[in-house]
Length: 374
Ligand code: MUC
Ligand code: MG
Image (cartoon, rainbow, N blue to C red; front, side, top):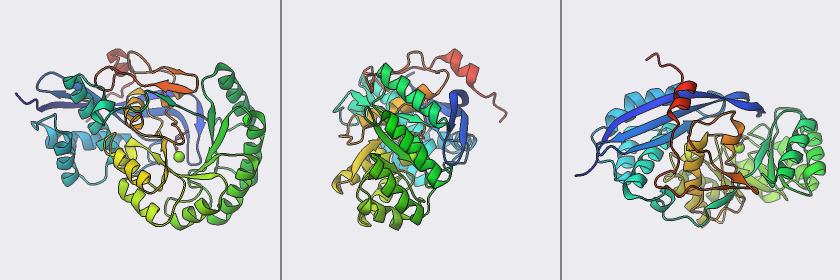
């Protein structure tokens, strides 16, 4: 008998970070994960995660809104539907629910996890098969203090955990950010690839100067230097900068990716399951990028292990010119899965068990979950 969707639960889970994480728009001391569990009529469960950064300061969905959308809109739409046909379910969701890609991503992930378990296959196999099961992963230096960032980078290089670092800049004066970046390139640049993420903070003039100087000092990749609303400036920078330009907030779905490519962008796209609506949906953007000669990068919303491993299943099916930044679980003081992912030698290993290959630790989940008022 065909299994159907029987039950959907969700939790808002607050896990402290190991240190303050400073971005141009917010400083995080805690990460809020929305964890979803779908139970099917055959008893198989699938889990997913929707995670954003700093409430509403980064994206348009808050954790509380994601949970509410899942309870009030996704659940009635999915209950009783055949659970194994992802295309039929996502098309049903798409026709009834606009936007809400973070919530869609958690649901798509949970459906894939359950179907993988039902078929005895890892999610990567459902997505066409892994090209790689060990993927490069960088670390973000974002303590807000140059000396602390250098010490942190040196420690991680000595431990062999990472070979590339991303610096979060844009919150301070351009000259301050350039001094900060130069000091880190000088200290770590002969042992590691150094990239920066400006998170949209510069206007076109500052970006032209900033990109010129960053490229000259040896920065390899410059992420989202200008507003997501200013594709023209991003395209111009992608032609003029000697360092590659990475589009992040500018590209969420394959429609955005197609538009930016048509406008003449050259560089790379930061793929994120939360921006695109899930690990299967994000592959459409990847394929548009490939057709346009645009490079691929496995991006994160600083998810915990569930969202991270869901992303890794998708990234494993792609040739990623710029590797991944799937270090989210390492930024958190604790994990809510029974067996954490393995990070070593600048890489993370993709689990091979059916589904996502990770299981929730119920006690930890209940410990960090907010008590529900609805
Ligand atoms: C972003 O904009 O890329 C990813 C890594 C990190 O430190 O912040 C995120 C968000
Ligand atoms: Mg970014």
